[in-house]
Image (tube, rainbow, N blue to C red; front, side, top):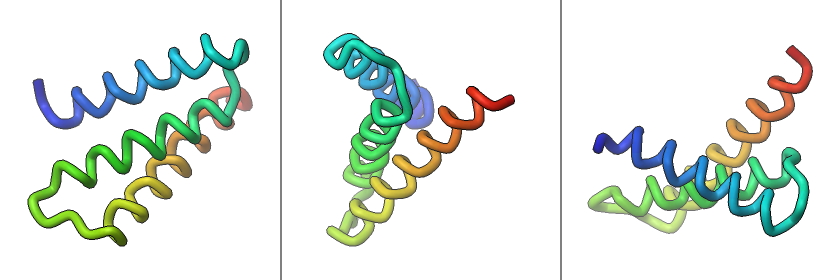
Length: 74
C-alpha cells in the first residue's frame, strides 16, 4: 500500500470513528482526523522535527476541514 493510500485509510477510519463516538459528522471530526493524519505522515519522515510534525498536523487539519466545508457548499 502506498503512503498516500495509507494516509487516506487512516483519515477515513478516524473520521468514521469520531463520527460514531460523537454521534455527529461535522467539520470538527474532519479537523481532528486531518491533524492526526498529518502528524502521522510527518512522523514517518526519517528526520521528523517537532516543528515539522506540528506544521503537518496544522496543514492536515486545515485541508480536511476545508474539504468538509466545501463539500457541503458545492
